[in-house]
Amino acid sequence: MDLAELKARAAAALEFSVTIDGRNFTLRLPTGQALVLAKRSSEQWDSLGPNATPLVLQRLLTEAAIVGWAGVTVEDILPGQPEAAEPVPYAVEAIGLVLDAKPKWALLLGTELYERIVARSEAAAVDAKN
Image (cartoon, rainbow, N blue to C red; front, top):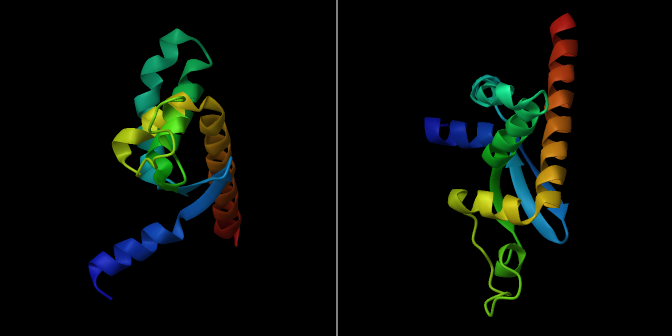
């Protein structure tokens, strides 16, 4: 197995799917290093109050975790447009548009991501004890 295949398999092992309103999102769990970097990046918002940092952290992690989708349309981002039924291809640059247009989706994706991060952390703690 070459390095490219090894990296692809390692990334795929961290991926999971979430379906919301008929749209399928593929997310990838962050590495430990990515978690540390996201936390540090979100801490600059501490001055806005006690809830700012967790909200920013959740958004940063959710945006970084989304690595694909299917079924997202122009209607999801800009309702009532003539091109409403056109699919929006996955692009990193479009993630923020989708999450801003659909805050419920952002919350559901962020919650699922958080639960999986916690489950992975708990499993690692159990493995470390054994």
